[in-house]
Image 1 (cartoon, rainbow over the protein chains, first blue to last red):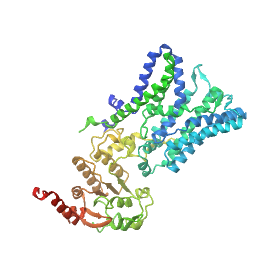
Image 2: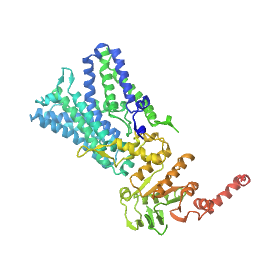
Image 3: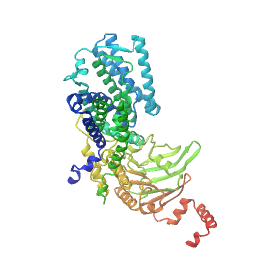
Image 4: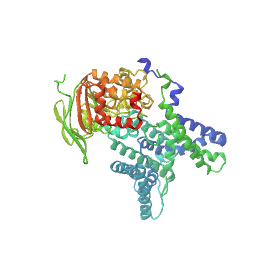
Length: 337
Length: 269
């Protein structure tokens, strides 16, 4: 028995991990742009540019990955980002209430939309794709309507007081967004939930087979609602960060995060239908996105090609992740009999 | 042995689905340490019967008794609280979860205290591997392996080990050998006997008469929702059981009809 529980490092078990494909992808694009982009890309400034993009995306992609591991999708994160930043800007910028009030209202609003998504999905049993698509449009409509009604404009200025400006909106060393710190915190929290808490086990079970999960007595609806609330909170946190950083909020902010978060999560090895994936994989997927998104500017090529590379990467990622998952399922065949 | 109180019994149970009579006045007794084989063709009501036993359906009429006490199962959770566990055809249902994690889904072991109760992965993996090895699955040594990497028989063993570990006194197995090869099926049958010898009451649903005869202590045959026969080990021959399952005379007719079409079956036989 002591021998059976001993952990031995082997290349085989590394290959079978869900993040292996993502690791190769991240390394490949980094090396590619390090060569094509020249020295500037590998210097501190280059790292800051893709880390900043990855950090903001990662704060949303990590909670979204939990939603996706549980077998759901959340397309509303873009609208939630725009509306939460507007809630903050109107509260603290337009009505001049204290910054803390604006931030708390924004975070509460994002979490609230998430709760609403979760509530509708679990009560109606409609696919989350449709429900969150509907809230995506509804929330962006509400944001535009109310912002114009209240302020008569689509852009609202706000200056965050200290210490909130330093907490959310400064550049460390003049280059690195403080969002990177928040990304690390979110990654730690998500990892604790997925691997160390019993909730993590429930999330994987729900994504694997919702009927069996319910039969074992897991509070399926509660978990799914909580996960949607989490992705709403993540979107609202990025809203606060962006608003503090740029000192203003726009109604059309953030829609790019909807598909970018799905790209990061899927490139990171999470199964689109749920039940499989890892935090490290999602972080690597997010880094891959950041590197491609920013690396293109260092090559001197037209930035329009970045989307093409991302599209091809997504396809390759899904194909290779399928292969690696098959490898994971074949685990142990070599010891047979 | 049959003088003891049955651990679970059905008394004149009927189940009606919108005018369709799935079960018609079925009575059954299930004893600890015995294997009851539930035989019948497709659509005979076997699935409905085990769903009544495991709390998925409430009977339209009739009573379910646990240890002689009439009991109503409002949900599968009620039945599992009484120690009734159901294992479905494909065993483990979370192919992409690790053995240790899926073994404890819904009843996760924790360590730590207060708000810092964490999932005890080491304990989960070791327990799952130990329980599976106790059932003769010695190939499995790493609880981090995915369920989907196990063979069909190993998955069945994992699901049975899980049920036994959580103290099931009634183990309902729905076609456990249907998707398995000969060797694997034999292993699962051996595991069923191990569970029986531990004093677990086993309900084995199958339409494989050979498998049933190998492990069964008692047999019940369902035909169109009714209990057509109910007998102990050795009271019927294999031919009688096969005929009964296929609908007796209907089989005779089929054979003669096929003979007239091909004219070769009897020649070969």
